Image 1: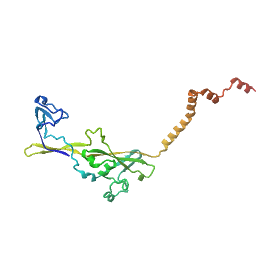
Image 2: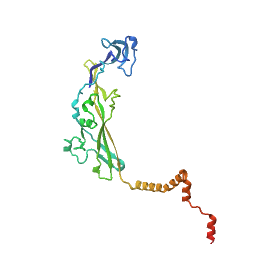
Image 3: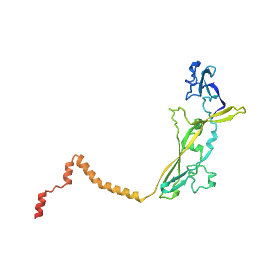
Length: 282
């Protein structure tokens, strides 16, 4: 966390940036509010330090300093924290519902189990460090600038089989960008403030910029069950296509093949109508 304490609504010098540095009052337009700045400018150019001048703004002062997050992270032991994920799914077409706390799990088991792909694959309690480790990331490195982890719960169920076969499958992956060639604003962070009022009625606040790991739980899957009606429809469509095979093949051969005339002579037998009538008279 980066903590800025005892902020009050007052006037102070902006943090130095190419847009906020100045040499005289003329460089600071009164009433101008830069969307990426720190507040509304008063029109004065004041000293930020012994060597730098910036525009004065009306804002919550003192302003948050532009510094790197603490390393090692503040809560380095957070990787040993655990979280219980409760998930309920429903397939309304089949009137089927289930949750990830399976029927064979009881209260005593939940008090000591921790998810392990080898020993406890059905346990819904996850150690944060294990979630990050499953995605082949290092918790301590990721915690400095923060990041976003995805917890994926997949429900693929064959409802013709026993319900006990329909169980969740857990996978984990990192969702935020970790491209070393595009490392502008890496990780995950957010700001929040705590407000106070002094005995004289002055309002103050503490601004906190927190870096951390956000966990997004994503649930998806599909279910199926045998039904005679679509089976018959598919069989009928297949038989209809088989009947068209000869017609399509004949059309291709008689239209595009080099020896189409030879094929036509072999396929069709031409009969003289006069010959037929003569034979009938006999």
